[in-house]
Figure 1: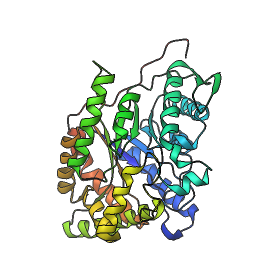
Figure 2: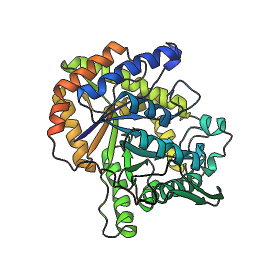
Figure 3: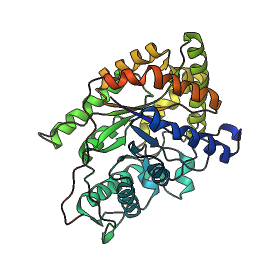
Figure 4: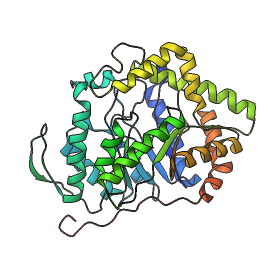
Length: 369
């Protein structure tokens, strides 16, 4: 089983300076490879204290230089907020400096504050994502980018030229059922962030599998990767109390950043699914919705965490996990304690699970190299 460590860089209510958050998070990050994790992940967000990583590819380039073996994953690069040819160049550069360790994760973004901050019409988010993803993925295989209805990109080479294929090591975040056929047609795997009941997620995967088999006949379906917010402690009651407190607090930061209780949430074209989330919060209240979110996550004693992870693995046939240990302003001594408890008592057992390894990048032709 592949196991990764996710960075969030949260600073709720500006309790610390942003500089101190980065100092502490990077200090923990230095522990990841020695503790035996397989990958490091960053996520892109802008403008608020929700997640302070505005350039995930820049962050992963830094981590490439601080590590030797772990893979480096984007969870995710939000394509509509970028010029696609610049993203393709950045991806190729990161893959070169990391010697092929990059795992590409893509998404389209959800927050109004971010779309408006980039002066973009969120109603075009899905169309831009599909066009940009197609342009970028093709350019990483062919060594050049050209075309696009919105982009109208004149043909230009990607330099440094991509030397390894991204087929089999590209994933995309998909929450709504409507996104499943899009990702299958793009030929990418799925990044799953637990936020819906697992039986509903399983129904979404049935759509993805059906479309994948139709558009990619004879090609094996990529197994998904699953993220999550985790807390581990050998004391059962302490684990439950602290996990429910801090994971619920995280969801409050998400509800605030995404404005989940506003009338605009779920009103943009292609985002209609999210209106159901707003209705759920209206019915159950902020605290109730946060508690339900926390219950989906893998927290508890080491044995409880392993049991929950086994259920997730079996439900969606995942062959990798990426865990966030630090979130919602949790004191860093608690983060470190949970991380070390996980590394000692959970990680060795996960490594014994017999799952298919992640796809290693294939060398491209000499023309693109």
